[in-house]
Structures are given as structure tokens and as C-alpha cells.
Image 1: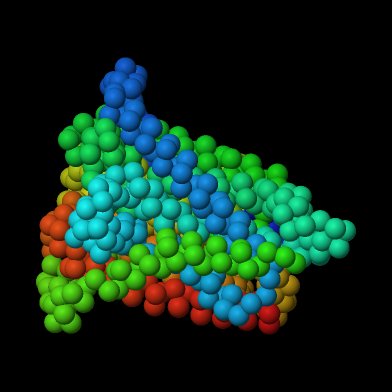
Image 2: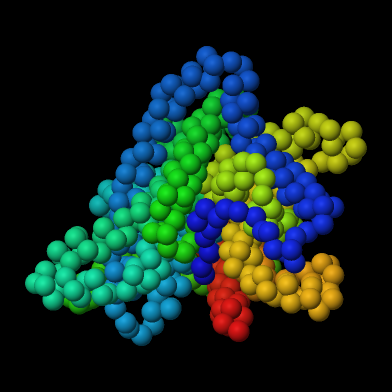
Length: 292
Length: 267
């Protein structure tokens, strides 16, 4: 499952045969821009306006409140654990897949993509089935006093599951397109495997890696469904930012809910800007891999 | 080249621990109910209604996305206009915006007293807290999939195809229908399948706007959560397994479509 990527395309079309009549042009533009305005821009604006509806003070109070701060801390902690795990996996897996030939490669790539086509709720459910009170390992965990579900380890596992493919699927096509010539030259000149990897392979894919990490992190911090299933929604303890926003919303505390949500919207905007800058400046050094 | 053994070993071990063993639990757990018990869960009216809503709303949303996504891709590739780069970047917002935030925002817009909803309410149209709200959320989620699959294909489309058609006397409409559309068809189908697959399992953006009334606006992933809250793991796993099976079939279709579209490129 590959999604192609437009790395900052520019320019319209001047060929006579491809030029649309003015009527077609205006209708397509009106339809597209109207749709984007209604479905993309307006929801984004709504988050910030609803957050600031009562002014700046309630907004800041909602964010500085202890439960909100603890949600922010937990979200940062979860991302700080799960993103590096998936970076290591992504780099190692794409090295194995792109630089070597073996049977079943296409199947392996399909498996890596699997978490993208699984419902986020299922991504959380599978860990409850393993580690929950009535899960396969539940009784053993309870005897040994280890808590995974409704605690940090479960939240990290669910986050790792949903962000699993991001780095790998960005690096695999990139490394494949670069081939193995440079690595083989390095080894011929006496470098060992590690040196080759650190000095040749990694510098060649650094922008692609950053791109993958960016998307991985955005999803890790914003994941809702999977985390919601394993978190237990304990205020101030196992609530991440999105879960805290949900709780506030269900308590009809709308301003606070949107204030907390606006942190995530801001994160999304920063991610989009960084991603666009990477595409515009280093488009040729990025792969045609996927994005979600 | 050194390092294949350890790299492959680590890849398989990590993937096995994080993805494959947990998914195996999903496939094994429902059978503690016995085959009949699984069937009872899956064929209960409430589960069937939720599956019908999840798949039906995803079908409608993906169809809308194919039409509007094609228009957006066409605009981004063929026309020049101010702020084009920003509009292009904006298309990815549904990928970047956490689903819960999208759900909150769409509800604020489409609730009966919301920004847009207040103008629809006097007309007797209600979107939030009905199945229509589910469709709206899924359209939001699915848009980038169609645009980003169609856009590069349209970009790379050989202009000589259209020139040849015009030289041979075809008008723009005929050229579009007989030359451009067939060339875009594999990409459109892939985008459709991707948007559909994502929409079927979507949770965060939907539960805020859906209202979650059993039998009416309750999606299948929510029903899994409901079963889990009652500690009925096996029933939750049974619903999850059905959805996973559907995802597998979709994944297979997507792969076949992409093989087909690659063959199209080579011609």
C-alpha cells in the first residue's frame, strides 16, 4: 500500500490542448476551494475561536490546570519513548529490506503497512486481550504486581502499534532508490558495517528520516482511539492530551476542551509547516513513500 | 554487505512482538465463545446495525472523496492561483490533525446550534448526532488519500495524449472522458480504497459528531469499546476480528489495484 507524494509541485499548464474553458476552470476552482474551506480551513479556525470564546484568561487557566499539565507531560513522555523505538525499528528494517535481496520481501512490506489499515480501536484492543485483567497474561501480571493496561506501558505499546509504519515506509523506497553502490565502495575501502551505516547510509537518508519522524511524532502525540482503549482515563494519571480534551468535552466544559485541543491543533500546524518546508527544500532527497 | 542477519532478526522480532503476537490474540480470543457464540455476537442486531453504518458511511464518504478529491487534484495540478502552495499543504491537515480535535471541531460546526448547523436547523436538516454526521467526519478524514494518489499521476500524464485527441477532433469533454479519465482510473480506485479502508475503522473524529445512539448512529469500533467496558473481551474481539478480516480483504484489493496501475504506467 503506497501513497504517492507530491513534493512541492508548482506551475500550471500552458499547453493549448490541456487548457480548460473559463467556465470549467471557475467551476472546478469554486467547487474545490469551497470544499477545502468548509471541510479543512473552517474546522481548524473553529478550534481556536471556540478555545478563545471567553477570552484569553479561561484559555490559559484550562491549559495551566494540574490535570491538563499532567496530560501534557504524559503525552510528551509517551512520544519520547515510542518515537525513538520506531525510529530504531524503521532504520533497521529499511536497511534489511532495501539493501538485501530475499524471498518474501513484498509480503514483509505489506505486513509493515498493516497497522495503517487496522482500526485504532483494534490497535488498543489487542493489548487488552494480552495484558488486560481477563487477558491471556492478565493473571500472571497480577500475581507479579505488574500493571500494563490502564498504565503507561499500555499507552506506549498502543502508540508504538499505530505509529509503527511511519519511519520504515518513508525510508524503504528512499534506500531502495539509492542502491548499494556507495556502501559497497565504503566496505571495499576498508570500512566495517557500522562505519558504513553511520557515515554513508544514514547521511544519505537524513531528510527522509526527519520527514518520517515528523509524521510519526504527530500521530504519537495525537493518537486517540488506540490510547483511549488502554488508558482507563484516570484523570491526572493516564490521560493524554486528546483524552483530556474528550473528558472536558463530555463534562460540557467546552472552552477548556477546545483550549486543550488547540495545543494539538497547533502541533498539527507546526508539523504541516515543517513537512512542507522539507518537501520544498529537499523534495529530491525525499522518497516517494507514503504519508498518513 | 554485512549486517543482514542481525538487521533481519531484529526486524522480525520487533514486528512479531509489537504487531503479530497481539493480532494473533485478536484472532484466537473470540473462539472461547465457540463458533456459535461468535456467530451470535456478530449477528446480533446491534452489531449488524453498527457494521452496516461503519461500512455504509465509509462507502458514501469515499465516493464523495473521489469526486471532490479529483476536483482538488485537478485544480492543484492544472491551474495557477495565489497561495497555491498553502492550499496544497492544507490538503494534508486531516493527516496531521489528531482525530479527536477534528471530531470536536466538526461537532462545533455542525451541531444544531453550531456555526453551520444553525443555518441548516431551520431547514430541517440535522447533521451532527445523526448518521449524516458520521459521513461528514469520514469525508474529512479521507480527503487527502484521494488527492495524494491522483495528483502525481495527473502531474505525470503525458500531454501528448490530450494533444493527439484534440488533433483528431475530440472536444475537451470527450478528451476528458475517453483519454484522461481512463488514465486516472487506477489512481482513483486506489484512492477510493485507501479512503474507504481508513474510514471503516475511524473512531476519534466520529464519536464526537455521531451522537452514538445504539442501532442508529453507533459505529462498529465504538461497539468494541462498549463491550470492553463491560469486560466482555471475547465479544469485543469477535467484532474486532470481523473488522480485521474486512481490512485484510481491502488491503488485498489495494495491492491488486496498484499492481494493475503499475502495469498501466508501463504501457
